[in-house]
Image 1 (cartoon, rainbow over the protein chains, first blue to last red):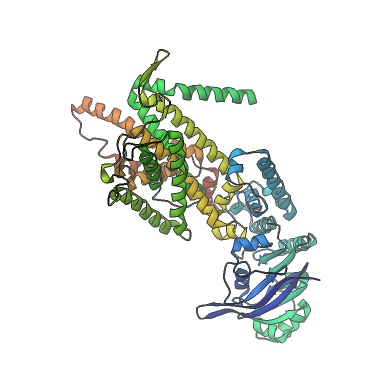
Image 2 (tube, one colour):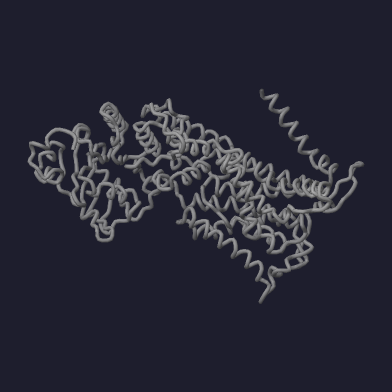
Length: 262
Length: 354
């Protein structure tokens, strides 16, 4: 398995808070890689550094053998990393279809001139954008909502829409920030199937998640952060038994931590 | 269907062609009013790109109108002795305004909402004050006296400012001006409609809805915002050039903060983000004060024998009142966009659920 993303010594500080210190990990191409840890462990900060929203104090990411140093978020997206947000950030007043169409922005090129002239190339591109967007809505299973305002969709469907929008940018790595948050058990099950089928499309997944049953079931490997540090990494079963992980979550022996729902 | 559409288009075209004659039958003033309304439609549509599409509240928008007007005036008046033809000066005004749009937009890229409004307001005033003071040490703008005797639109010997009789029809200056104004307004409307439903238009909407998400989707928000500023400003620059040529005289006074607010009111009152709404807003806010002037004053004279309240004196008061009333009754504007309707609807009822 080739390496897709390498993080080396990522450190990020907010005033007196060390959000991330010296975080190293490697994600292989085609993996579903889990990122877990208690609240405030630095998971979302790591996402924000990865996607260019924050600049790290030290360390760097290497993506597909290219360094990501000092790239703006839109440049990171262009390189092939797409993300979703913990607090859903859809274009709430636009339709679901328009949301996904906006995701096609970097993979299409019509400018002002094209828009104004509406020549054949632009019209063809527009049609392709709409067709692709609809295809992605079908893929995540919310095509029926294509013309509804994104903000009016049920919560689980909003999460799915965010995934469709991110997929529209044709990422090689899709970073999902708590995709199962707020979902009921059957929705989570559906999400798991969706994650597997995304992987089947050749997209590598990086997953922040609190739902342990989902993480243990779907992730190939898991990284555990606590207070900005990596405290464990490896196969889900190994990590689950790691006394440091259990302590970080519960401060209690393994017997009580086994099973689901942390 | 398509045939019906063509008949519709033809009827509208005929109505637009005959409009100045119909208005002239009532009075030449009304031709001037419609011309002014067309200028405001251009301005409002330009501002709509910035405020309505990209969601950037610009309170200094009239500065670009000024830039266009001065560009036209300086290149086509005795002030510098230059008399370049309008088909050179109007595009120059358009471009210079676009450049100013980028220049004034660039420092504001990180700002949003109230802060952006304050900074753009400042920029607008700076431009006006520059126009007022750039008469020394080198006299560029002729200061507060303004620039006089600006060339009208002219093709060969055909001047758009003079009255003449063509084929038995009397065409006054304003009536002639109506046609190029209407033509350019229609062009700007088409441009706006096409931009809105395009990759660029969607990127603007994305920036308005959620800038961070837009960036994460790969949209270069800096460039896309600058593009909005440039496009918006360029329409104002074009309108400014036409204004200068039509009036024959401009001075910094015409480009004050009140004008910016006026154009913004047109956008907001008509329906931010909705092109037909914005056009309606511009026409109403230009036309209504004139209607009031021509009805209220004679009415007062008829009833009281003298004018008790001069509507001109309380014009801004009436505007304010109109805005308050409309915003209360129709928060999305008189003709709101679908997106804005959704936005307002959601505040009253929660999501639809499964």
